[in-house]
Length: 252
Image 1 (cartoon, rainbow, N blue to C red):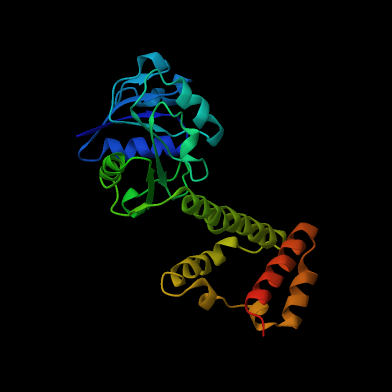
Image 2: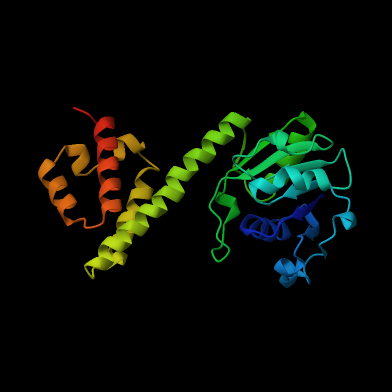
């Protein structure tokens, strides 16, 4: 049985707690947050604390906090030589105070508090400085998913950057599409089957091979019509930039 203490109260912390709470071979011994009201609704399921000096002894301490808080919080932990990991895609493993055994437990997924997550489908990227700690961390990860991958800091940073493109930037494009349809009283929901098919297709094809549309075809007439329809300068700039990017990739 692996024991963990979770520190933090954001989306990642909340989803990890739920996953570990229901996992076999894992016990969540305690949940810390400096503002205990943020996790008060879980008081019947796990011991809570807002006092670092009261932290329980555990096999792994998971810092599921903002990137900027990792270094300071790890330095304030009132113990040393225990396995402390963070959940960030972009923070260095060395940002954790060197008095600890250090690691990274990075779930490569988008987390919203109101949306359920099936962790069995979530890849978890693992990084440690010590080989023995890696095996402990992998055992923890495989309690909630079979998709684990050992990565180094450079690989993890590139994955996090790529995740911003496929998730955050793509979601912003959905928002722009919604604004465009709403401006003409068209239904954004009519685009949802296309969104699903686009995501499904790259399970079978590379993004390069899956690309379609007027930019790839160099369909100047359609592109000109689209630009004329856009009455938002910001949307027009994004359309032009992405069109140029596609044409550079699929140049004749």
